[in-house]
Image (cartoon, rainbow, N blue to C red):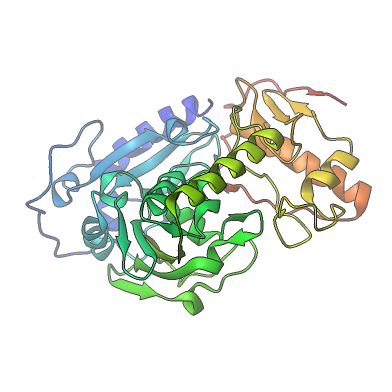
Amino acid sequence: MGGRAAAGRYAGRIGRVLSGRSSINAAEWMREGVRPNPAARRMTGPRPEGLAARFAGRLHAGRPLWPLTWLRVGGPAELLFIPSDAADLAAFMAELSPEAPVTIIGVGSNLIVRDGGVPGIVIRIAGRGFGAVEPLPGARIRAGAGALDSRFAEAAADAGVGGLEFLRTIPGSLGGAAAMNAGCYGAYMADVFESAEAVTRAGETITLGPDDMNFAYRSTSLPEGAILTSVTLRGRPDEPEAIRARMTAALAKRAETQPVKDRTAGSTFRNPAGFSSTGRGDHGQELMAWKLIDEAGCRGLRLGGAVMNEMHPNFLTNAGGATAADLENLGELVRKRVLNSSGIKLEWEIRRIGVRPEAGETGKKPAITGE
């Protein structure tokens, strides 16, 4: 899982931060003139003195992040804030210094946290306060940014809203899906997106429309510092049974072609073709990432506990005991070999955050196998 040495280093650094003996002082991350939040509840784990009582959410110092990711790797967050809801997030951001380093995560389905951990403040958008799903008139569904895509799709089916069933096969949460314009089988978030609520770096709540998102293949361009808190999608009226039948068929197709039972973070690299597979065989495979990886001889390639999956070579997999370095280094090796083989530079789809371990914290260099 990695990150143990970094956790110890951050624990010591946090102690210095909280006692004011660090060049980065936690108190300096918050604006002046703050007032205690009466809705705050008692914290568990390490608590930054004077900060925990101001917010209803949970604030942890030196919290390991690997349990919060699907790949189960990585070091700790210097400070981890899990807001109770959008209002709590807005209050926190309103008091946060503009100079404070901030990293946003969701349920960790498309994420590698490096073994050295994440300096600054990590904010996790997940849990009940961001998980509600609400049907609206006009074949629309609104949900918190922390709602799982699969749960959202099931709720849409129950409400008789079709056209959103592609989300049933996409891992992760709705906020992440909107932020990266997730999609599969020819359908994308951009096709069904109506609006989103977000909190700015200054703690203001804003509404974003499609033009504000600047949707592109596997990317958006949100206003700088904006954090999505809820998303509204528009589908079309349909019979729940028909919607569920399509979801069942899509799940079966996914299970036939993707390693759904392995520890992965979804597709590792974006398709150079600029679109995801439709699953209908109506397009060529020449510029699909899996094809380029396969042709470069990287299917089954291993580095330590990391492997390019035998079933689908565009799925970077923790086969057991992998570190974040194993996974990222294997991905970079694949990129190099694909470039040498095809002249095409693969772009990461998995998000990577944090820093590599300091000298002396890494163990023996793992061997490359499967060649």
